[in-house]
Image (cartoon, rainbow, N blue to C red):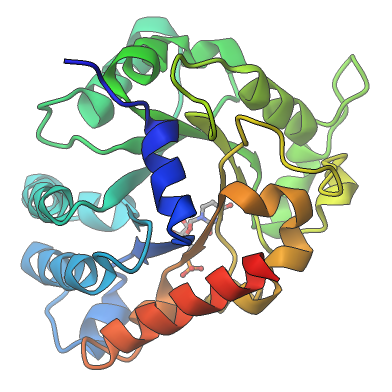
Length: 284
Ligand SMILES: O=c1ccn([C@@H]2O[C@H](COP(=O)(O)O)[C@@H](O)[C@H]2O)c(=O)[nH]1
């Protein structure tokens, strides 16, 4: 059977104007807001409600694994059930795990999160290349042969990241700029429209500060950009086109707390409103 690349699957979502990525972040105060206990069962319930609200409306969900991991093995079981629901609903899943390490250790992370049939199988995961972009090579087979994707942290939405991500490398480029260039250069067979390796760029940032040029027309295959920072952190999806310019073509605008706050009643409407707002912002 021929495997369809992650980039190709993502391209179908984007072609249908689905650019929203709903974060699944079962914070204790949010669980209380939902009338749920701060335990694995509460996290599972929230996750499964998000899947139901996002299916067919959002491009993907992004479980923040930390909020499940805090419940130990019960949290992982809860997350497995959320992932299974998302698969059944046809939603792409980006596991926000921010993993990074060398060689075989990183390959083991890829095995956990990207291997077909793994209990924690997702479509893509967030990764950290602090040990060099090449340290991610243990996942390349998952990307090239199993239809999986990676999102490499480049310029993150939190202000304290600037010291590291704005630092200049020996070739004069910022660390963030070089992460973007390395992701763009990654080649996956079958990625005609969208690359299978993308980057995380915060919506709260002025990307030009990092040497990231948003004025250029989208390349093909386009670089997927996972963009947290909308909603609670201050950026507005209505401004997504202005913030990301030419990178907007393959943008996944991520919101967690601002969509989850308010509980399950009205969740589907909040998801739909955000999905429409970001689609409109990237069309005009
Ligand atoms: O640069 C980054 C990278 C990841 N995140 C994660 O995204 C969500 C944001 O949640 P909100 O409630 O929408 O603020 C959260 O899981 C972060 O760990 C990020 O914010 N910035």
